Image: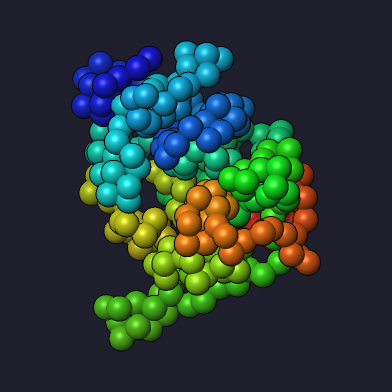
Length: 289
């Protein structure tokens, strides 16, 4: 189905919000739109909403399996407003959001669906899930000058770290069970990344409820949603493997000519499998086995 805007979707396609989990994919350009949608269809989402510009092409094999909604370029404000409108329209449903060129992985995702994972997560009395945005990049920038290649994808095996998240309302005392996470290309090329955009943590998976609002830093106005675990034990976390930073660094004239290769001594080929991410400590299975 295709809709001229979110308003038309709410008027004529709202039945798509009857059951979750629902994936929201924001398309910044036409890079890997089809592979992004195929990957998330395979994850088992009940519905996928694709917010994209009207002139973007969508592959035929996925066009009839998703809800295409015309939308302006996904600036921070557009993303924030769109998600908050969907939260208002579908309280109680689980949502996930990402951008084109990003791929969700969660523990054992090759054999279990996202719905099965969220059933367990709900039983753990959790309403949100922390995800780490793990930078992917092409190993050969001569062959792939935009930094994007599914067949030649690499990631950093180390170089990730966390800092306490200060609470401005409490004399900058660290917030409980909240950390700011860093690493990947945003850390290695931080001189080209605005300070506010260097974190790699994102609350990508969450359950909508009345009054919930996404903020412009990928956190929510309910502080419990921003925690990495509950008070009594570790919880599941996920990974969003993303070409966005590589793509931006190579398309930005201010950084593109400074980067001949993204590879360094801690680069390894990405295996497109959750086991690799678990072994590297880039997501947590919690109590789910």
